[in-house]
Image 1: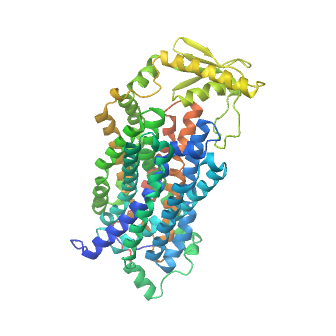
Image 2 (image 1 turned 180 degrees about the vertical axis):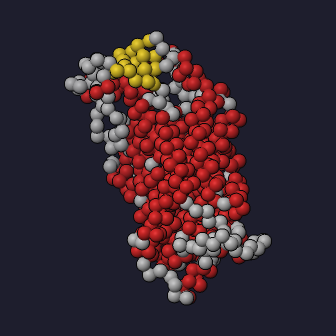
Image 3 (image 1 turned 60 degrees about the vertical axis):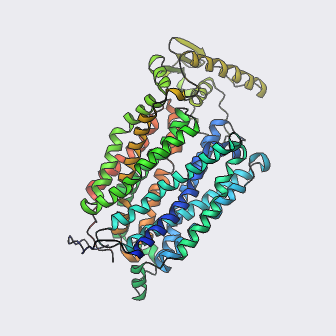
Length: 553
């Protein structure tokens, strides 16, 4: 472990030309890499139709989210593989390789035939490419953060690494800008073939990124360590098979990166999904609102990174988690109030209840589309989930055909067991039409009325969510680097970061969406990030040290 000395190393003012080059080159290359990764998340709805057309609409969207999450699932393995290389052969060359893998995988997605052209091979190849992207990203972050931090002077590590922290948000912002530009230029054609253009453009970004990174020198701390023969020959063993270091890996995962991850993904990705899937805003407007919040909020990464050099990393990160725990529900309810007031009014004035035998109701999480939901309860709930209608549940006697109660009106579902495929399709269409008319009569909008959106207040709510992101994310790179010794730093910090962000964060949209579909409560998915953030706030506060004054040599 690094020294626990309370004496702060000497600091100096100003940033040298070489240090500016390191920050710019590392940050810009990572912006491009995150751009590649987030294109998929931003286009999840279109990709679900292009590559998972063989299943129903709800299953297709969940399947697309799972394919997105697959890239996150593999990230810890990328952290182990590339972290080991980074600690043995160097930071620079390792994260040069990661960007090559990332960029080429993204370019191939833009060329990949869809489900209609090559059938089931399309989603299989897509998921393989997502896994390659996740593997590369698993090695990217640890290399970039370690590289920049090891170039930073004492007392400015939070400030230097905060520029790396902006790259994920800037990458998302860049992907949104490119998507919006293509949508405006191509119109309806974007959904059929124009969505490929942002993926294909990544080859240009890859060329620029590789050229920039080739100009960099190796980290001075690693060069010194290598010259003195102190580099680790078994970084995996030292990192994860020795209890002193393994304990810190576990603590920083549960008391740091897990909470940071769920706050990050709730504030940006889940907020976007909520606007699009639940509040039914037009895609262009939703993307512009998220982009606006990112523009306003991104400078706070630098602010909180610099502030952590003065007051410490831990208090800022823990405060961000605590604020999320206590304000997520009111903020997301405010988003409904300001972005789709008709939906809010309908929920209050005409509450919806599903009356059914609870034993017949399934948990409709069917990502591979193999299950058939044919009982009356599932048919009713499937319709309400697709329509983003908030509902409660009421038990009925066994054998009762499920009913949807909307205000004072009651609509009966139907039992699909025993019906032919044609009969079931006809009955489903008839029921969906009747249910659609019923919810419309009671004020439930099929789409948000864009003229009723309070844009300034919606933007304010989204900006608050982004500021929470900057609080938990801005200081964490410096904190991770300072917690581990130089000889195994790349490996040790990468694994908890990518388990936190890849698993706790990456599966958030899928998990939250399934929780909403299961309960009928459009806000129920928020319990996932709230519980994780609360756990991190407790463990981080009581069990993790402050590190801003440590030496990292």
